[in-house]
Image (cartoon, rainbow, N blue to C red; front, side, top):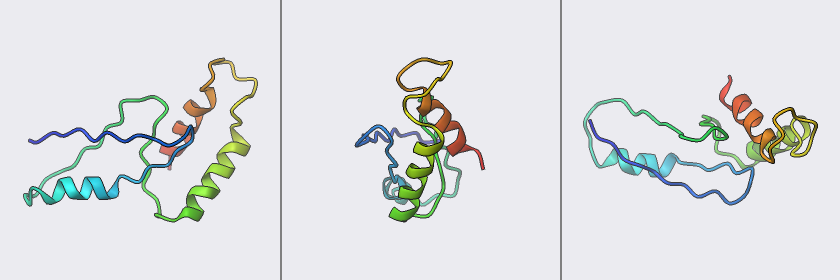
Length: 93
């Protein structure tokens, strides 16, 4: 079993970060068969498998902003309440 940590810095509050290339580079170091497990240790992050197209990202951001505005009457009254809901919806398929 091998373990590595991939650190990704996001550019803004609602970032979509493509990790395909860094994961592929790590996988190419060891040609053995196996299983890759990706874990995000943050409650407002989600791992999503989707097309690598700017239009998909723009559409997703637009819909999320419309459905889950940053400032709304959330019961969880922290500045990132919308981020928790967005991560749940992003992870559900």
